[in-house]
Length: 489
Image (cartoon, rainbow, N blue to C red; front, top):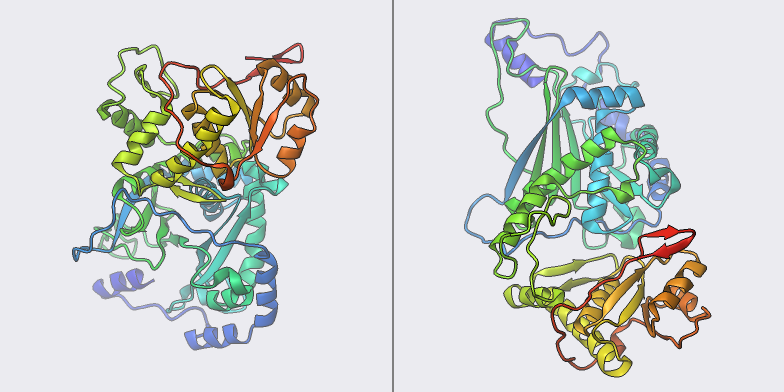
């Protein structure tokens, strides 16, 4: 609106009246907001956010940020073609903001490694039907709302279900938009102690003035030169869209203390990847979405070629997901040990149950490997089944088996007991690593011909340093299908 009035002033044209006859003033809007039932609104948000946990985008820096007086924030611009997204939204009965929220929730799930994510988003405040002329009112009417996505909910097991749920939740959220974030956080109690329970924000900027084109009422043409990135959140998606634009401009604004430029570029690529996946296959499950973008694949390929441990690939026929690598006479755990030497304090594991640096991760794996090798006889060509949910200790167990010289056999915790029992029989396993609780009980209750040592992983069993394993032994055996109902390798 300010841009429109600026154009009219430059053209020596009369400014329009502030809205239609009887239009409310900004003071009227403030009074209206103060008259809303705050208790009912807070009850809505308490119900909506029951059980929510802090959802913080992780720190993605190769080294500590430098305080050299430069800008504290940077941004990466992603432009996507508008027409296909508009057509998709029209076909599926959702809006562009809903599509963007679904994509960001999916990306956030991967980066935070949690099935229950939340983030902030801005409502314009100009959709209140009780305020006459609110669309043309001068003043800041925006409200900060919270979007929560629980991917374990059945409706969110497909992108179309996720989109429909987010679209359906928008109306009630707008009806209760007059509670401040501070009031919402106070009502949640311990969840937000020490700060906000989320650190990312989605902002949709819908431009009514066609920049880059002559104004219909004057000869003046405005165009955007640059945008100054600023936000109090660690990561902000600023989405700029107008009916006259061929592209939707998505700026990823990030704190330099949280993310490197390379990580921000990778993040934008992951977001573009998810947008494309949603629009091509609404029946796909967000939980199975591949967020690895072409930028990430190319970066990994270059890092492999530059590594002293992984020389350029002389075998072009060996390929996985477009990434090729040479056959190297180096153990997997030795590659990890090299990372411990190069960057011991960098994050190696970011999981729902723990966060470990390379040094911490390596130390735990060594202790477990020592028990496996010295006390349980794990060594070259010994198969060790692993039965874990997604967790820190699943990864520790994998590497520990390799360190001991054995090969791990991943078991699906959700597989029928008969299938698991068959795999244990075929592998002739004598040692099984599992998570404490129901997973451990399931394995212990199985009837197998051989005696099983079942280890529920915990820190108490991690002890002395084991001998290193040698290169060239088998590292993994995986069951990939069935033949006549019987799994085969």
